[in-house]
Amino acid sequence: MDSAAPQTSRFPWRYALAGVCAALILFCSAQALSVFFANTSSPLVALGSTIIDFTPAWLKDWAIKLFGTNDKLFLFVVLTVVAAVLAGLVGLLARRNMRAAVTLVGVLAFILGVSVLSWSNASLVDVVPTLMGAVLGLGVLVWLTDVARRAAASSSLNTEPNPTETGAARRKFLLGATGSAALSLPAVGVAQTFRGAQNVVESARSALGLPPAKVKVPALPSGADLKVTGVSPFMTPNEDFYRIDTALSMPRIGPQSWSLRVHGMVEHEFTLTYDELVAKDLVEHYLTLICVSNEVSGDLVGNAKWLGYPLREILKQASPLPGADMVLSTSKDGFSASTPLEVLTDTREALLAVGMNGEPLPLDHGFPVRVVVPGLYGYVSATKWVVDLEVTRFQDKAAYWTSRGWSERGLVKMSSRIEAPRSFAQVPTGSVVFGGTAWAQTIGISKVEVQIDDGPWQEAELSTLVFADTWRQWRYEWKDATSGSHTATVRATNSGGELQTQTPADPAPDGASGWHRLQFTVA
Ligand SMILES: Nc1nc2c(c(=O)[nH]1)N[C@H]1C(S)=C(S)[C@@H](COP(=O)(O)O)O[C@H]1N2
Ligand SMILES: [Mo]
Image (cartoon, rainbow, N blue to C red; front, side, top):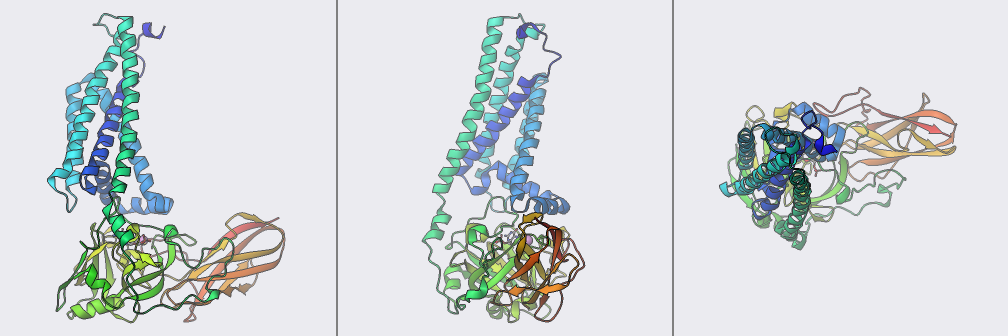
């Protein structure tokens, strides 16, 4: 019988498990309780955000590169694994020295509490969920460790082995352990649903109509979308639009509580409310937005119809002082972007945007107000949940990503990609249809060429040009495809006659470049 065997040589898994259960209770109860407090009172979110802020830039870049939009999921998986291992170790420590374990959990809870309170607008009560979670977690740790000790009593030298008692303790441990798991996970689920239901900002958004546009863009010409199978649609639906930001917990700002402070090196500082903004002459604009982290052929790019007010008008009203050369736009959650002042005051449609594809901005794309600027990567221009515009100088202020090693300026590089067929696809003999997109914001694409193997460059058919700020689709048909393995390469030329550079560059520090080439097989 197992109970008769000495257990000292075996791994004391019950103690480790007691630690894991305690951590589960701590985090889940705190998460569930955080529903009744500010959105930022969840210790999980606070810890994750603190980690994001302290993660070295190279690691962050690597995570975005590898996981793209799933980078936050990746963070949570890593966090869960690390927390589970740590909790197991705490459990093992509790077996030897309960007082030391309790102190350690106290210290960890303190760190959690500090990260909750370090949010810019956190108040002292926001720490309550973390505290209550820590108390419950400690209770579970002490209790389960005790049960585990009694369950292992048969192997202990200074207790009388009593098979019935040991058996009962083992059942109790099993019940306690499964019970904590069975209670904590659904509690989080119920709490999150509750939070969703009471999400006033989302309901404010749905109730909000889109303000009217004073200047409408013409309807899309029928040739704007070539409708090649496998190629991104000309207009990216909001739900498919890539999302990149540092916000684990999305800032939720109701339109009525939103305001924008315009200040710094200006003659007239002022504050703008949402109602004031949408009462202005809003304009529509088609613009392809792209992330600097996008690889050649990557998918961190999307095209939308934006509705907003030109930033050049906002700046005209503020009247920048001589010497100013940059506008630092800051988000509610602290992210910031530095945009050259001249870019925001020239004729391009740099917008303080409130609408995206005919709807108010989705919450995760910056509701209620964000910036979009033609010709610049998102990290130096497209601040979501924007609440502050400071006119300043590049030499005086550095934006979020600039201080993490990315270039101060981020001009979008001309790019083209093959989307159909996919890399390493097998296509039937006969004719092969190639398709993709190309962009050169503010200048426009005038030509796309495709090369099969080492053959001559062939001009592709282009979709109708909508604006210089939007991408163009291309299509090329290889009529008599010969069977075997082949490569296809694509390159673009902009309306200024400039050929896309062949020189490969990584996304860091100022955007990827190089011609996209892929392999495929005709069989
Ligand atoms: N508040 C905030 N705005 C932000 C960011 C951010 O991290 N926080 N990321 C920027 C980056 S790097 C990009 S590429 C775009 C992406 O915008 P999207 O998520 O709407 O596609 O938002 C920009 N605006
Ligand atoms: Mo980005």
